[in-house]
Length: 180
Length: 296
Image (cartoon, rainbow over all chains, first blue to last red; front, side, top):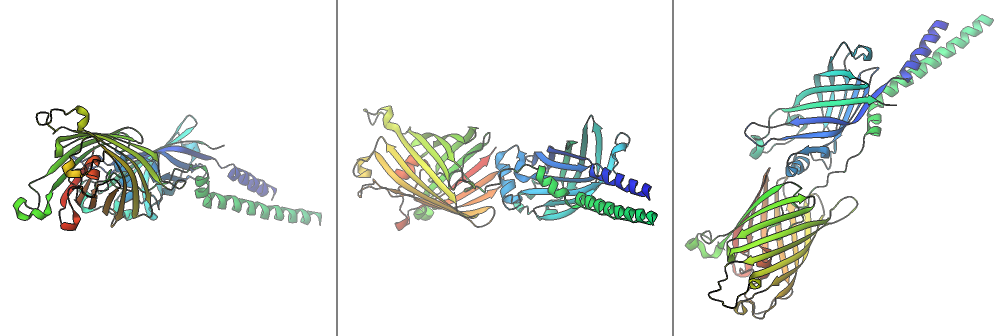
């Protein structure tokens, strides 16, 4: 019994110290460009990300207004006409790195990443792979996946349909540091 | 007896440990999003712009080119619609204005243009003084322009000096986005005309004060109905000219805005249309026109 008690207390302690890694300056990029037309792409360099190393739970959120476009007018149209950023200011992701083990980070680099992405209040299941590496005291998480505008009820008018790609490529690169 | 007591105590510890463990794991599950929210830094909220283009129709709006954005403005004002088929409703007599707009610094826009009416060269500056947000209710912008009439001929007017070619306008543009769809603007304005034709204006009034009004009603995400008007306080009753009224429509298509409009003014420059609107809505002398706005 004493052994069980010791074990339980020990595991409580472990969960109590479950480590959190995070960043406020994660880079999320999307490309919806069509060859021969003006590039439609933007980068968000203030994505907040949090990772629980004990479980592989991962969550991220970003503000739509922080996506920087090359042309400021395109940015205004993105927020005003497509994303309705005044009513839906942010996008969030809640997911998990499957079979994540902090101690195996040096050996295993590719993990399945799955979860729910919510944009404009519409949820979509995402299933992709992520590359996770340990560099010094940082955990680097990078991944790519593809979504379509209609997944999130984003209406593309006929007049610009040819200029916006049907599949939008999202790439992310997050350098997480331990939260103390 | 003693032994069983210890056992009992152990059971209590066991339950406590279970409870603690479940609390901790619950916390990890559901509070991840809260924790994320806690560490996330809020970004300024997105404020819908009051107007889509730099002009409502003829009157300047409170929109200013964003830093580094280059805009090309091509405007046409055709002849009187009343001419009918003789000029194909005015299409044969077009006034064309080509304007470049650029912003080197955030909130300051510079522009240069050339209009075929009176061969007018114009330059203008637009400076943002305040922006509507959750903490401030209005957009306030200063606009100033100087125009050169290059058509006046020295051969016909031997006393003509360079200053006689000049006209100026200065405006405070005050707008408010009242709802997501409706925006309203007021523009107290001053116009200086250095040279006036007394046959046209009746009594000379080189300095003129006006109050401009403008509005926009969005009918869909990319289409809006616009209107602007200016009341001139110094116009002589014998003047040939009228107060400018413009009714138009914005069609926004990504990098372009098309502004289709009807106006009783043929000039697209402020000293031109504020002082010298030659048409008259009451007897049907109005001009069809458009502005095409392209961003680079």
